[in-house]
Length: 375
Image (cartoon, rainbow, N blue to C red; front, side, top):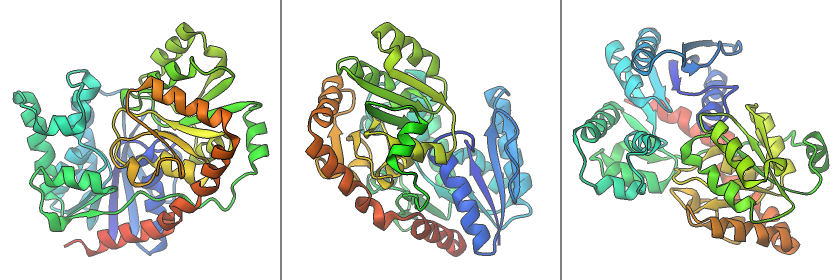
């Protein structure tokens, strides 16, 4: 079987799809299947044992979207399946043009995310589902749902997102919960070595991912300004980086915030291994890969209780949950871990075991079977 994997980001980008897509490609190859990738990138991606088709992000959005759909169609004509982990509308159009079967990993409501990024929507995902909308939002919702209805299988990482998707009228039998995987970390560096490699001496928080409005890292910076002697290491890049650097300077904490830029998945795991806690302050989420990477590295998390996060993070067992947007709560959680060594050690001890059932080989096998069995 030949599979086209569609992902909006790809290494060296940091983020869930950039981790998932290459891992799935390797799993498909191991099962004897052929793989081809369609992605967007700032520069030509590194060579892989399969073809990586890429569209430059420097193109204007309409031309970029059309180019992606065209690349999907061209790749799909020589394939049996199209698997999309993002860019679902473009993947659906390309699969339709090539008359090929589509499987989708649904990680978010793209209509909602576009409205949030533009600033036209400030409410929650749940509120967005029921609010009255104008023509443009109705069109976004309609095209989102039409693309998903074309998929033979829709895989969602959380029960939370499945309920949201069923509200769009998708067939329940086609929508299956397959959690995001936690990476296997056989070559995990010792914590002391990881800390030395990053120059960490005191209490340190780590966060990783694409720097977008969704991650609400401004809240993290505001909280950090209230807790002295704590450092924050930020791995990743994105459109919000400049604004975040200026905010850190304005708050007088530039010396305690290090922006590390883009990195590999190994860099992400090394960061979490070195950090005393991982920090996830997202305004909205589904089930982020970086959350699972942090827990797999044995690092407790401070995370906002949004989306599917509470399905994995149990408050005061493997992490601390806080309300989204509450700088007071974030700062309070950081202070608790700084001051209470016993709590931090207990959360760290529970972190790794809490995601053992979500091991990457096990989850990837489930996804490979779903792609194979789609009819």
